[in-house]
Image (cartoon, rainbow, N blue to C red; front, side, top):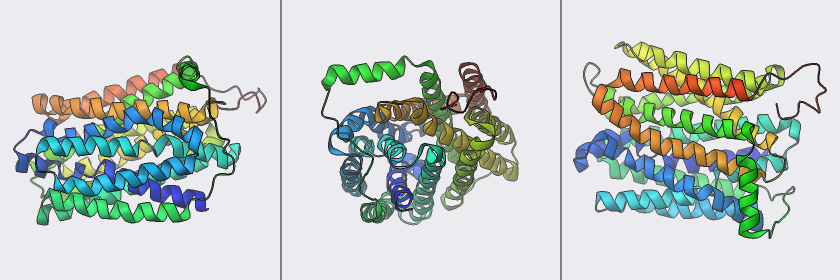
Length: 394
């Protein structure tokens, strides 16, 4: 299907760039003589930029169309990404990463709204799962390219290599993505109406629970990947950057689990599958508490698979619950998602620097348990005796 193929390439272009520095954070910290938490700002500021622009992008997309808005965003982000390796100071690097993230805000929320408009309701969860699977491949590709290139030629060369990859993916997106058929242009109702739409979503407790889930779990997920590389580069592991970059192969479990989770919703419902994903992620973190490399890597695979299973359900569920203003509902989800990445992803470094890996992993486990309790309470199990039309969106 051209829609999913095109959006998969958009996922590669977006997430390869967004997290392009993650695989080389230890190299950046060493080269620029900064701390782990300061190096992680290259991730956090990019995700802050994305978070604060997803809602403006969604309203722009309502006016000019989903495909056009995504095209503008991905093109601008690609140009900014190519400028990142030219940064002559840490401040300039952070500024470019912030702008890059702001441009990338035109992709994630709009993509989910586009899918919900272009595919049938029965296949919306599967389509969202397929899109999330594409984003995992994008994140993986960027990190696998950055690690070896960074070790050989430095983090600037790594950033350039990822930007070239993202450029190729952006071109593929522009060629493949079909013209929208289900989109109806919206030229109103202005700021007041926009705020009313957002307020309506924020007044829906079922949506708010999903937004909190996105904030907490994405924050914990990014914290794990930001600082695990620092742990593996130190004793007792002492791994080089190329080998550390291979930990991102765990993203393949997310590629599989996001599709699997979407299929399982047809049998067990969104609630059950989301909770199962959170349980799997927590179990994986437990394994990372050991000093055995094999156990740490196995735990990372389980954690990643569980996270993306939960994320794919949460992302698709927003579109099922919000019958109007879907782009804005998805934008609020992405706002929470990337604010969590920025805030918790950075703050996790403070925990790691002060108390070590086990404290960080334990903190993320607490976030997962709190998320599971919230979702279980706010989204009660669907009553099988109720007709399907009454259970829609469960």
